Amino acid sequence: MTETGTEGDENETATDENEPETVDDLPLFDAHTHVIPTEARGRDPLFAEQLVEWMDTNGVDRAVVLAFDAPEAYPVRAPSEWVLDEVDSYPDRLVPFCTIDPRDVDETDAAARLEHYIDRGARGFGELKMEMDMDDDRLELLYELCATYELPILFHTDRQMLRDEVGLPRLENVLASYPEVDFVAHAHGWWSHMSADVEALDLGRIPEGPIEAPGRVWELLAEYDNIYGDISTLGGWNALTRDEAYGQTFLERHHDQLVFGTDYLFPGHQIPHFALFEQFDLELDAWANIRHRNIENLLR
Image (cartoon, rainbow, N blue to C red; front, side, top):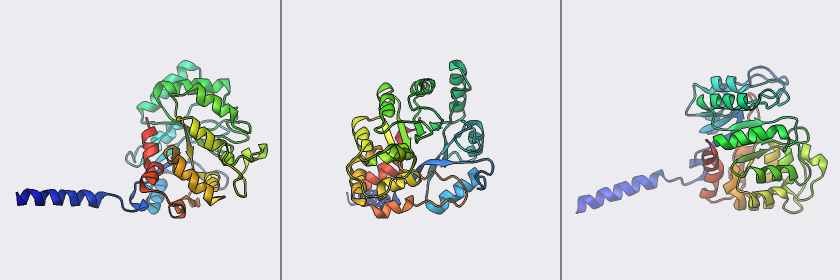
């Protein structure tokens, strides 16, 4: 009897020792990184080996790696096929996404190409970043394919890419039209709507000053369960830190629809987001959602 009790105590102790005690004990999954094949904007290329080294330095366990297939998405393309090749040596660390430019393919070719990328390991679609309106008819093919193949879509919206209007009516139309697709929102067009006092120019810049009142980001997250916020880039950082009281409330209220991301894009890229875990005070369960659970649940 005594031996059995001792064994049980030891097992319980071992389990307790594995429980996270601080936010730093939780896994960290970066939902937004890149690999870039050549120099761009005077910046060196970024390869998978360098990305993983940066992850090791900053305590990032895993990362989504996004593709750039559209020519306007970035000064140089990072095609899906190349991204899949580049991350292949790091299956336990790097999770590839893929994209398709709907201007290059018909429906049959798009489906075949997407199936090929999925067979090669793609677990999501992104970065969707093109000079089109968010609800452009040409994007319907992509939305429908992602519904069929159960792929989340990470998209970039601003005044040029995946364009919308103040109030995000086009995005809401897409969310309502494709409830089976999970969308992950990124960039100024989305995060400018943290505050209710948005003007057209804000969709392409980082608004300054305190938040007047909760904006459309809060409302859409509350109304639709298929939209998530990617807190990467200075836009995401600013949305949370420009008014820390609102940032705290926002994280408490919407942690189940937020994903940690950095948009790490080139060697030496300075990322402020790691400071968020000390700057804000959340329960460990809420931090776990932001740091890894939400993106893990979204992956195909």
